[in-house]
Image (tube, rainbow, N blue to C red; front, side, top):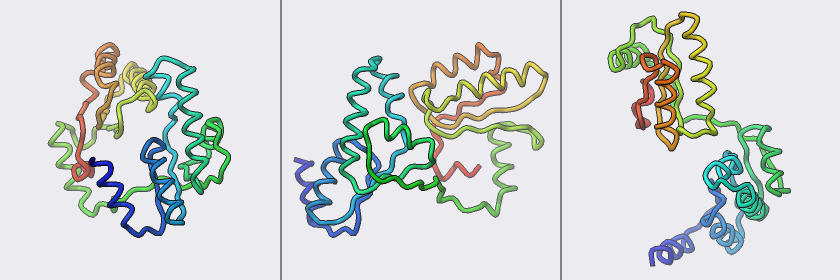
Length: 204
């Protein structure tokens, strides 16, 4: 019922172009809508789905079927934007043969004019000294983000008697495992898991 209501609402709108960020069910629907309205439709590809599917489904065969389906779907859009050229081979391996344009990632954050105050707030919040060496990760806590590599590297750094703090801001399926790894690497005093940080708090 909700799907029909949403579809009717979209059908009654006038668009110049449709941009999709997910190559799944909604993508198929929007491709049909774009063709019906005679307007271009483009997609953004930024996730290595093969890696994600294999990790979750534990089946290479099923993962391949799914990425090929994604490739087939994306072949129906006019153009695919990718963040960098390292994703071109990944996209082509899905069976995509259409046009690609590199569109570097950006941010809607403006440069902070009050960085000193923000730094002081963050230092107070996390108990840092002003001259502490701080590393930061912001994002989903998933294997594809390769947080393990950073933790392994920082364990080596600590073994050389260097002091530092590492903030991991975000949440995801790997959180519990990563916390256990931090304990095993003897990094508990160095690593801070903040959980999800709201966008208006990220500036700190």
